[in-house]
Length: 189
Image 1 (spheres, one colour):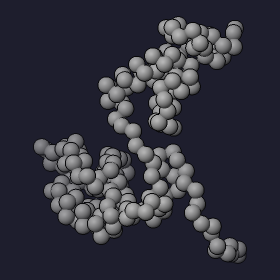
Image 2 (cartoon, helix red, strand yellow):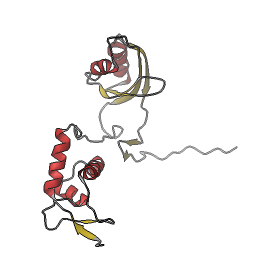
Image 3 (cartoon, helix red, strand yellow):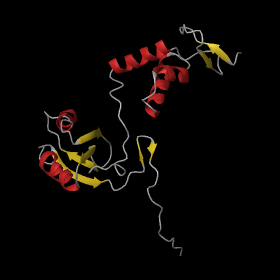
Image 4 (tube, one colour):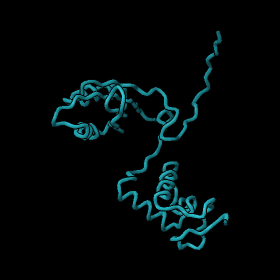
Protein backbone atom coordinates (compact mmCIF):
# COMPACT_ATOMS: atom_id res chain seq x y z
CA UNK A 1 0.00 0.00 0.00
CA UNK A 2 1.55 3.36 -0.98
CA UNK A 3 2.30 5.85 1.77
CA UNK A 4 1.05 8.69 -0.46
CA UNK A 5 -1.69 8.36 -3.00
CA UNK A 6 -3.57 10.57 -5.37
CA UNK A 7 -7.25 11.11 -4.63
CA UNK A 8 -9.83 10.39 -7.29
CA UNK A 9 -11.62 13.55 -8.29
CA UNK A 10 -8.65 15.79 -7.56
CA UNK A 11 -7.28 16.82 -10.92
CA UNK A 12 -4.38 18.80 -9.53
CA UNK A 13 -1.26 16.75 -10.34
CA UNK A 14 0.47 17.60 -7.05
CA UNK A 15 -2.46 16.68 -4.79
CA UNK A 16 -1.39 13.67 -2.79
CA UNK A 17 -2.63 12.58 0.59
CA UNK A 18 -0.74 10.73 3.27
CA UNK A 19 -3.14 7.90 4.03
CA UNK A 20 -2.90 4.73 6.07
CA UNK A 21 -5.91 3.27 4.29
CA UNK A 22 -6.32 2.96 0.55
CA UNK A 23 -9.31 5.30 0.33
CA UNK A 24 -9.37 9.07 0.12
CA UNK A 25 -11.67 11.35 2.06
CA UNK A 26 -15.30 11.25 1.05
CA UNK A 27 -17.30 14.49 1.09
CA UNK A 28 -18.53 14.02 4.67
CA UNK A 29 -15.01 13.43 5.98
CA UNK A 30 -13.61 16.30 3.90
CA UNK A 31 -16.28 18.65 5.25
CA UNK A 32 -15.60 17.57 8.84
CA UNK A 33 -11.86 18.08 8.40
CA UNK A 34 -12.41 21.42 6.66
CA UNK A 35 -14.56 22.66 9.55
CA UNK A 36 -11.87 21.62 12.03
CA UNK A 37 -9.19 23.50 10.07
CA UNK A 38 -11.33 26.64 9.73
CA UNK A 39 -12.29 26.53 13.41
CA UNK A 40 -8.62 26.58 14.32
CA UNK A 41 -7.74 29.43 11.93
CA UNK A 42 -10.32 30.89 9.53
CA UNK A 43 -7.88 33.43 8.06
CA UNK A 44 -5.97 30.87 6.01
CA UNK A 45 -5.85 31.08 2.24
CA UNK A 46 -7.80 28.41 0.38
CA UNK A 47 -4.54 27.03 -1.05
CA UNK A 48 -3.15 26.47 2.47
CA UNK A 49 -6.36 24.80 3.62
CA UNK A 50 -6.30 22.56 0.54
CA UNK A 51 -2.72 21.48 1.26
CA UNK A 52 -3.58 20.64 4.87
CA UNK A 53 -6.52 18.53 3.77
CA UNK A 54 -4.80 16.95 0.79
CA UNK A 55 -7.39 18.35 -1.62
CA UNK A 56 -7.14 20.41 -4.75
CA UNK A 57 -7.63 24.13 -4.20
CA UNK A 58 -10.73 23.96 -6.40
CA UNK A 59 -12.33 21.21 -4.30
CA UNK A 60 -11.52 23.03 -1.04
CA UNK A 61 -13.09 26.25 -2.39
CA UNK A 62 -16.17 24.33 -3.57
CA UNK A 63 -16.58 22.75 -0.12
CA UNK A 64 -16.29 26.14 1.60
CA UNK A 65 -18.90 27.66 -0.72
CA UNK A 66 -21.23 24.70 -0.18
CA UNK A 67 -20.90 25.08 3.61
CA UNK A 68 -21.72 28.79 3.31
CA UNK A 69 -24.72 28.15 1.04
CA UNK A 70 -26.08 25.47 3.40
CA UNK A 71 -25.77 27.84 6.37
CA UNK A 72 -23.15 25.72 8.12
CA UNK A 73 -20.53 28.49 7.94
CA UNK A 74 -22.27 31.58 9.27
CA UNK A 75 -19.34 33.96 9.62
CA UNK A 76 -15.77 34.45 10.70
CA UNK A 77 -14.91 36.31 13.90
CA UNK A 78 -11.82 37.46 15.74
CA UNK A 79 -11.19 36.14 19.25
CA UNK A 80 -10.55 39.30 21.29
CA UNK A 81 -8.84 39.47 24.66
CA UNK A 82 -10.88 42.40 25.98
CA UNK A 83 -8.65 42.57 29.06
CA UNK A 84 -5.80 43.67 26.78
CA UNK A 85 -7.87 46.03 24.64
CA UNK A 86 -8.01 49.71 25.51
CA UNK A 87 -11.82 49.63 25.34
CA UNK A 88 -14.55 49.48 27.98
CA UNK A 89 -16.17 46.06 27.61
CA UNK A 90 -18.13 43.80 29.95
CA UNK A 91 -19.34 40.27 29.26
CA UNK A 92 -21.99 38.45 31.28
CA UNK A 93 -23.39 34.95 31.11
CA UNK A 94 -27.14 35.05 31.55
CA UNK A 95 -29.46 32.26 32.67
CA UNK A 96 -33.09 32.58 31.59
CA UNK A 97 -36.10 30.63 32.76
CA UNK A 98 -39.27 30.90 30.71
CA UNK A 99 -42.84 29.74 31.03
CA UNK A 100 -44.54 28.82 27.78
CA UNK A 101 -48.23 28.81 26.96
CA UNK A 102 -50.01 26.83 24.23
CA UNK A 103 -49.26 29.41 21.52
CA UNK A 104 -45.65 30.25 22.46
CA UNK A 105 -42.64 28.04 21.81
CA UNK A 106 -38.96 28.24 22.77
CA UNK A 107 -38.34 29.32 19.16
CA UNK A 108 -40.69 32.28 19.62
CA UNK A 109 -38.87 33.44 22.75
CA UNK A 110 -35.47 32.90 21.11
CA UNK A 111 -36.47 34.95 18.05
CA UNK A 112 -37.24 37.91 20.32
CA UNK A 113 -34.07 37.63 22.41
CA UNK A 114 -31.59 37.27 19.51
CA UNK A 115 -32.75 40.55 17.97
CA UNK A 116 -30.95 42.55 20.69
CA UNK A 117 -27.44 43.59 19.65
CA UNK A 118 -26.24 43.11 23.25
CA UNK A 119 -26.91 39.36 22.96
CA UNK A 120 -23.85 37.69 21.44
CA UNK A 121 -25.09 34.13 21.77
CA UNK A 122 -28.23 32.32 22.88
CA UNK A 123 -28.64 28.60 23.44
CA UNK A 124 -31.51 26.42 24.61
CA UNK A 125 -29.97 24.21 27.30
CA UNK A 126 -30.87 21.35 29.61
CA UNK A 127 -30.66 21.67 33.37
CA UNK A 128 -31.94 24.17 35.92
CA UNK A 129 -32.68 26.92 33.40
CA UNK A 130 -33.96 27.09 29.83
CA UNK A 131 -31.66 29.47 27.94
CA UNK A 132 -28.00 30.44 28.31
CA UNK A 133 -27.06 33.79 26.79
CA UNK A 134 -23.84 35.74 26.46
CA UNK A 135 -24.49 39.47 26.81
CA UNK A 136 -22.05 42.35 26.35
CA UNK A 137 -22.00 46.04 27.15
CA UNK A 138 -19.68 48.90 28.03
CA UNK A 139 -20.21 48.54 31.79
CA UNK A 140 -21.83 46.33 34.40
CA UNK A 141 -24.46 49.02 34.78
CA UNK A 142 -25.25 48.86 31.03
CA UNK A 143 -25.64 45.09 31.14
CA UNK A 144 -27.74 45.21 34.33
CA UNK A 145 -30.10 47.79 32.83
CA UNK A 146 -30.35 45.82 29.58
CA UNK A 147 -31.29 42.64 31.44
CA UNK A 148 -33.78 44.41 33.72
CA UNK A 149 -35.41 46.56 31.05
CA UNK A 150 -35.27 44.45 27.90
CA UNK A 151 -34.92 40.77 28.82
CA UNK A 152 -36.81 40.48 32.13
CA UNK A 153 -39.77 42.34 30.63
CA UNK A 154 -40.40 39.68 27.99
CA UNK A 155 -43.70 38.14 29.17
CA UNK A 156 -42.51 34.51 29.04
CA UNK A 157 -39.31 35.20 31.01
CA UNK A 158 -39.90 34.24 34.65
CA UNK A 159 -36.36 34.49 36.02
CA UNK A 160 -32.94 35.81 35.06
CA UNK A 161 -29.58 35.19 36.72
CA UNK A 162 -26.62 37.29 35.57
CA UNK A 163 -23.00 36.15 36.00
CA UNK A 164 -20.45 38.83 35.12
CA UNK A 165 -17.25 37.47 33.58
CA UNK A 166 -14.34 38.58 35.73
CA UNK A 167 -11.50 36.97 33.76
CA UNK A 168 -11.30 34.96 30.54
CA UNK A 169 -8.72 32.19 30.31
CA UNK A 170 -9.87 30.53 27.08
CA UNK A 171 -12.36 31.58 24.43
CA UNK A 172 -13.44 29.55 21.38
CA UNK A 173 -10.43 27.27 21.66
CA UNK A 174 -7.88 30.08 22.10
CA UNK A 175 -6.03 30.09 25.41
CA UNK A 176 -5.21 33.52 26.85
CA UNK A 177 -1.87 33.98 28.54
CA UNK A 178 -1.81 35.14 32.12
CA UNK A 179 -1.32 38.90 32.35
CA UNK A 180 0.45 38.89 35.69
CA UNK A 181 2.05 36.41 38.00
CA UNK A 182 0.12 35.26 41.04
CA UNK A 183 1.95 36.77 44.03
CA UNK A 184 -0.18 35.02 46.62
CA UNK A 185 1.58 32.71 49.05
CA UNK A 186 0.38 29.15 49.12
CA UNK A 187 -0.88 27.99 52.50
CA UNK A 188 -0.79 24.34 53.44
CA UNK A 189 -2.55 22.77 56.43
